[in-house]
Length: 489
Image 1 (cartoon, rainbow, N blue to C red):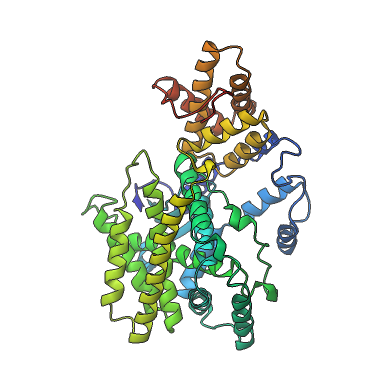
Image 2: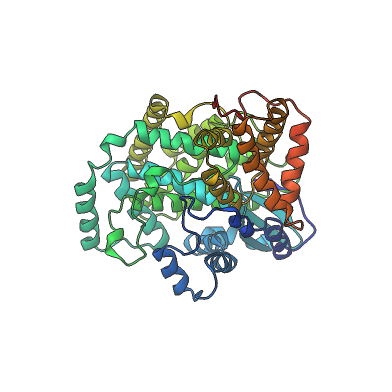
């Protein structure tokens, strides 16, 4: 979405934004040894291989990952590829001056465009990549082989104008046929529950965790490993790339359509609808195959569907510059049905894929509500997790997970939840000073606060403290946190 003008060059503004969203790698020292999460003393073999490829061989795992984050900016790379894949974008932005793009270590799901001195800056939080990846992989795993093939071929044809050799396509088809029944027992109830847990946690805490069904799959091998062909996460990997292309084009549209000229209030719904259609039209104008056309439409649909999921779980009904996601999806359907950019075969394939995606979304939603695991009960996600740790008389899982969540960029919602937990536990501790469960829970939360306090120059200390003062100033709902070991929610 378009944002306010800043009096810096795009590169200066990006440097300041990246510094503002610091990486809290020191918070990982909060993770207890043997807590059960990922081993932080060594990197997985596939990550080791990638770091070695780019020449990062020295240092601890945290130091090496920090260096990788410094060198590799996925938004900058996506933007550069965008200009190569879509020549019309380069022409549309030619008069805009210096247009730069960058990722920031922040967990929210929203891109921003800033008018700067001499150009524009596109800023996208890394949270966009995480939430898009996990959602795309869940949808991809449980789609038909025809849908998966369309996503893979379409993305490849869009990005490189060439498909896999026929031998590789046959290998993919054979593996998909071999594994097609593996996930039937998980669809739609358990898969739907995983999807709803993903978005409930994002709504409550502003973080994105890989669903258990994704964790259970073997890691996607690096190219050109033939084991990638037909891998359970392959289609989702390409669907994510298509959604990210749409997002980047949507942000470029705000610049190309001059949404900063002052004739309309910045961030109006009309601008957002126009940016959506500009992005879809730009993708379709560059396609030379029905697979690429259908895949482009599905990338736009996925990003809008993620927004729809996020809206459904937004208990606070947060203010946003974007129109309701269901209206954006309706506009997408209308555009695909009426556009002359799609031939008959391309339009039929695009509408068939949209129909399958929409049908599966409804099935996953219904299945998720029917599954209703205990961990998906009502209340705040952090409160439920802390209550479970209190009941089991162990803090290790809580400290392990909260540290990893904070490492994603310390979203304000997570700080709010931690502060709310602290305030209620302090109040309960005054009323019931001998309750060991309350003491255990308060100790867990205070370990997080204490670790931040020891890094006084960090913005995280201020974020947690500000959230604490705000929590003290308001009544605490009964369902936010349970401090009692006797009756966890």
